[in-house]
Length: 44
Image (cartoon, rainbow, N blue to C red; front, side, top):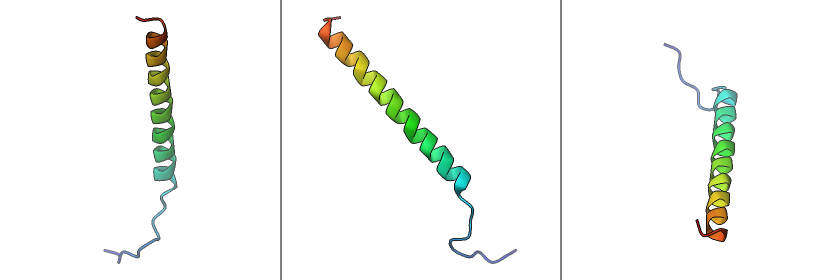
């Protein structure tokens, strides 16, 4: 087994996945807030 060397792993796919997760989390949160504001305005 090869020796592990700290800092040599390629993490580009991991970073892309994490950025996508954060982006969709922000979209869902913004949509949820917009729905709550809409419901509050129209007393639904």
